[in-house]
Length: 390
Image (cartoon, rainbow, N blue to C red; front, side):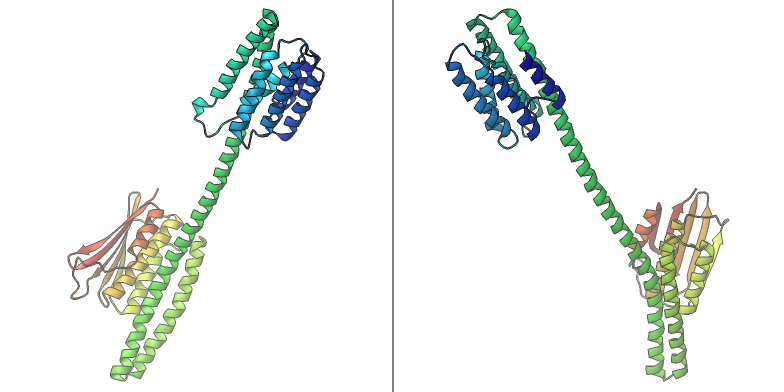
């Protein structure tokens, strides 16, 4: 039994006799060769059975990962043919039966339904038991011999199943790791897209406000020169346009600082300055008021509300030039509310949408848990933003 002890020790060190690793297969093949080479079967024809069975085993074990069905057939033949002559004195055929059936226990058959993956092993196992029964009867072996062979087979099959489950778990872990990496890459990509969208919204608000006011001033200057020949008035408009360009550059820099969350201004003061600038730039009546006690807000909330106010004032100047504008900020219990109201331009229908950038405003407010409503009320266009706070 020294050969069986060597085989058992090798199985304990490597997980199973004929594992999927090339080194394990080579080692087990060498052990099988050594055991079979020491055989002294009582019948000469047994050498042919052992030689053909061993050849089938070697070919089958090295085709396990590339040709699963062919490998299964070869390994099944090796195990079944060896089981029939295991009872022959001196044949040492048990080693061939064990390595063959254990290789089958290792095979996973990934395309086969889970409940049917053990059917090949079960079928070959039943065949080997039948072969051992026939061999015991043929060669006059005792019941203790028969059960000892079954015990060896059960032990090696358990080694094979354990190896298979280890490999399945390792494969699942590798797949999970790959999926995690893919998810992380997608998350990083989504975060980059979100950041780009956020930057686009901020720049849109700043540039739309500044360039819109600048466009109005230049149009007035052109009209003063072309229609009235008012050089002094046109020059004043050009100077105001220059101031607007400088202001726009400053606002763009402030927007970049805000994106970095550096020194976000107080909301009431920033809204008051924005309203006053609108009055100066567009020559329209503009009022700002605060209801309630001002409270510190998250920088993201301040940025979102300032962007909403800037966009609403830009739309008012573009679509209702010269009309009065009211900007109101109200602090309620756990809610801050911003409202921008302007009279509709003459001839514009109350139901006609007048603002651009409403989608951007809604997106910005949604990021901080806020909501936006915009629509006509009577003869006015009203933009209302609400954000909760703790």
